Length: 185
Image (cartoon, rainbow, N blue to C red; front, side):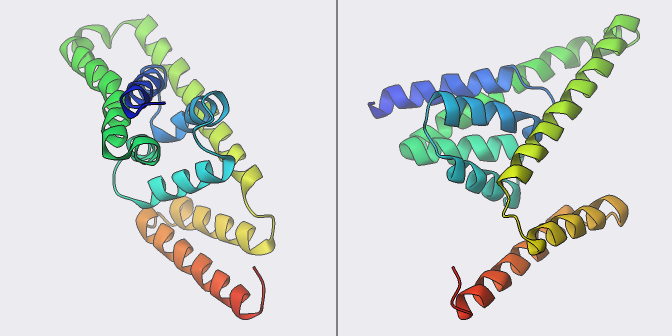
């Protein structure tokens, strides 16, 4: 596929993802996976895991980081720009529209119920992303220990998620170096 057509496809794909996903980056993971991995075949399952890991480890919103990374992998800088603009535009216009009329509609009972339903749906999407990542995680005590420890640090002790990610990355690197030193993978 020509780069120009690929950039157009990236833009439209991420425009669709951005337009039909509520709840931010974690809620977008299942849609990105379905569109980019399963439907388009642009990336592999392993690349999807890497993209999520890199997107979480870099500053900025997860969905934008993922779109930028996928676009860059597929078509360089132009692809990164196309995918990023595509995923951002729907949110930009929705927020712009809501900002003009939110005060007038927030007291309407139907709107309050709609937001309750959206929150419930977002929770399901986030849980689905969690389960998908959990199924793909390495099945060993170290991985489970790290996940549980990270969860406790962030959820119970209110530690910085960035600090926890840095510590987890460091622990993973140390583990990999020790495995390599022992003659493992």
